[in-house]
Image 1 (cartoon, rainbow, N blue to C red):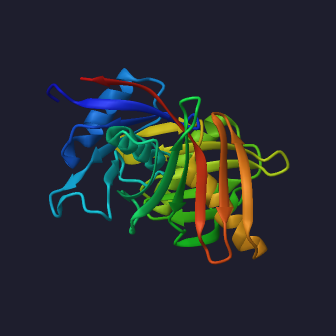
Image 2 (image 1 turned 90 degrees about the vertical axis):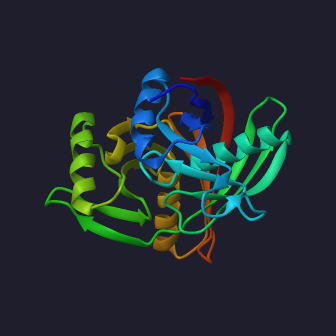
Length: 265
């Protein structure tokens, strides 16, 4: 792997994320991510930052940061974390940025602001789903599936034993042919979400502390069902995430971000 790979460890609503500051070729990113997640066992995912592009040269006024997740998926929490990282690099306490993020076909707009306690409040415009449908995986399991570029989410409102769920997320990911899959265990009465996410490209499976794209999937699904706007807060193992879905289809995710530390290998 070599020496001198620098990274920061961020905590967006409990969904701890490694952001790699050193440029790493895409083909090496899964191996680097695996090594870093061994070093940082509380981390649930890894993203790779760039502030320039081989195609475009220095960052333009339109795009401040390029973020690629190790599995090529999209991640709202990592997007907010990347925006916080950029503002800290620039020495500013708030900003409205545009990011180019893996799994998103259009630039992603992110707003972040530093709070007095050292955390940051963030919100990110989330890509809309390419489709929302009900999928019959078997006679026993028939659930809503919300598909985004790079990741799909199955919304489950029933109990499934932990080990069974971990088997199913792998099976369903292959069945759907998606780059990554989440099973979002939703308790609508208590507004509680328990996310399970599998990314086959880097062979990671986590009961995540918080899932931004999963939260967005639920907002999009509920808005489509009701035909009305949705403003929802979902309590997850690591904290609360907020999702708003407007009638025009705009989806915006909100949460908090804090910096945990930094390191190198």
